[in-house]
Length: 308
Image (cartoon, rainbow, N blue to C red; front, side, top):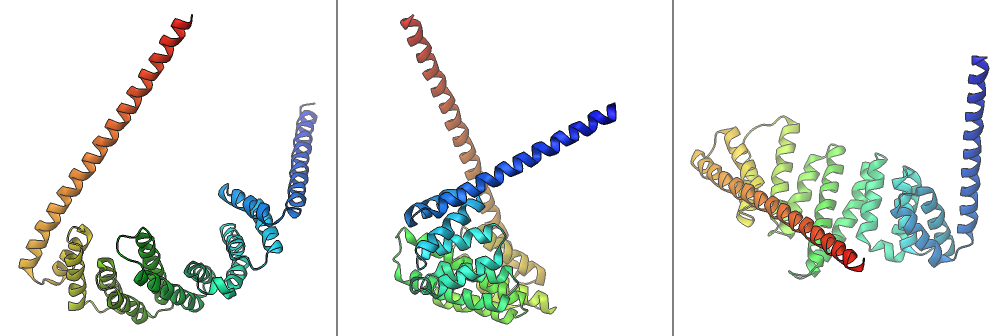
């Protein structure tokens, strides 16, 4: 008797699961049919909404419909590629990014070439990745040179350039060409000599190359790069700490090491004070917010009592 009840429960559960699966399939089919009837603008908007919700099936269907309506629309194609990538369908993403890079607008869009490079790298196609990254890097560099200091776009362009630079160097490192990886940063420091991060990254890449080759000898160029980074950004503690570490490691410039250690301690104290002030301000704002809510609640209660 107990066994029969158990079998009945299992059968009921299986039937329920089957019904739920069937219902979900029917709902998906209805969604696909509805999306297939959409015009470009509606399909594209639906795709953006699905993408934001990380509902990849819906996003794929919507963007595919958008591309079907307007095959040469760069935004629709790149969003479709992005969703394919997010959904783990990397080869499909690669096809879309390639098509996008062949379009007139896509040929001069650094972000398209960068994402194409990322996709090649994800498929372990590092040589193809370097070619795509180089195109993206050249476009980002041109855009950086064209923008003026103080413009809002400068920060984003700097970030895009730095990320692309790092990706290109990593791709060269993956294929074992560390000389090319070092040259990437050497060229960058020549083009943008006032960028402290580039000098810092060049120093680290030179150290990485030495480590991989087993050559642990002192490299004066590493010191020169770190000193230049500190000169350009004297309040960046990482630059100071790394130079101390490198000089200490090789037993060089003991007097300079003492100066740098004192500087690092000063910067650490400033960072600690700044963090403490931020935390105190955050707590103060939180308390003020709670106090305001309590006052508002009290006023509402008074109003209710008067109304009664």
